[in-house]
Image 1 (cartoon, rainbow, N blue to C red):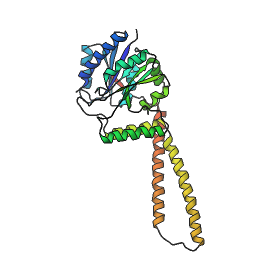
Image 2 (image 1 turned 120 degrees about the vertical axis):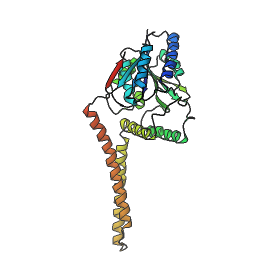
Image 3 (image 1 turned 45 degrees about the vertical axis):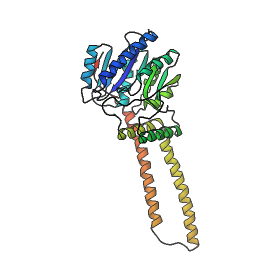
Image 4 (image 1 turned 120 degrees about the horizontal axis):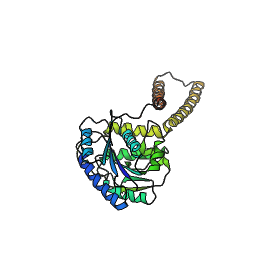
Length: 313
């Protein structure tokens, strides 16, 4: 029989973890019964270096129920690395894996529908929000702009999908063969090419605790997504450079014409504007190129993505 593992990345989630695990165990039991999955189907929680009592709670849940397993990072490595660590461990024994955040804002009842799609031969099932009513106007607007920007940059991304998904063993194994450190999972998974489908749900507010993605983290995450999936910003620099060169040629012709006609006047306004504009353009260009060079440097070092301090089997 096939085994299901639910992977949960957790960072400072002591306020919601116990109730979330209880809900997921109940749902997993229902899925196992409905689709005759292995009775040892389990839950794997990855503690991403929490500073609260998250790990102590995971240890307690494990002692109460051996189907609850845990990994603990030595420090905070980030949400994406926690997902990768969970999938790396889960794929050793599981045939299908579901990833979901610990706050259960993504509807866990949709796991049943995901497994139904898997039973019909689908390797990857995306959980997609059917509305963003619970978000602020700013978050809805910026999210829409982000998805639109990536689409125009040629990135194959599932709009309104985060990291709530089901993946088959072969799709996880293929995903784990991508070894880059600067990784944007929700943009990389569609590139695997396996049969996929979506289930839709309404996201609910957090039961307790605070969001782990404030504005600063969201902006950094969005930038990582753009720079890890496309070189379009570098190409944009090339286009701007060509346009600036064309403008310079036009200005040269204009300057020579004015000089020949004897209409030239000495002044500094146009010169200063040009200097500041081109100076700013150069600084932005160097910054974008430096970002890519920095990511390449990180990749060639081949440092571990994460360090596991404790493991509960």
